[in-house]
Image (cartoon, rainbow, N blue to C red; front, side):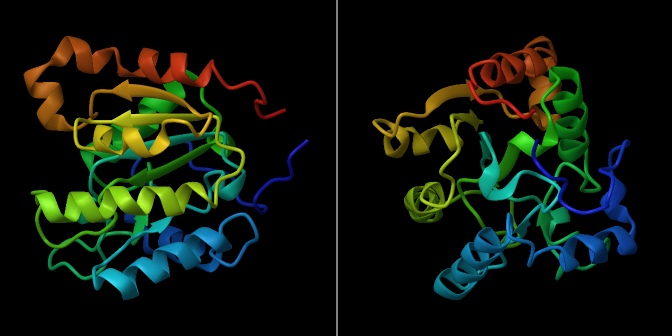
Length: 215
């Protein structure tokens, strides 16, 4: 049986990262063995690309994860440098924004254990705008290959959103199962509500393909 990350219970409600203490606890966990290689990966991206790159959430599975949810670009509530509400500094389902809240609730509805999951973005950094340029998409997609080298147990990758789908050619031939999903943002919910509501079923189907589930 996999050992717990620490003696820290994952939140039972969304948006817990609005609490500064919760953010401080996550940051103190970045040197744990399951997350340290990914923290170094994020730090390297900050230096090489000169952008603000959030960290992976230590309460997720880290390098032991079985399923990767690859989204498009970090939102403003991942940022610690923006004015107004301060973000968490993490790619996390616990962030204080609607998309993160939907992720939290959809993972619960799909019955996907948190320890089996990892979340990241094709464009890894936040630069003050939600817009995605062609160049940053090209550079970000190239980094997905480097990320996958750190994730030996990944069996399924869910590409969440059209921009994330650009990473599919890099994953072909790697042996992972690839699934596609609508993005779970409020914009998609407003324009395609029925399909948005089916996202948990899509994620649950993707997770069902994993052969070595958490026990």
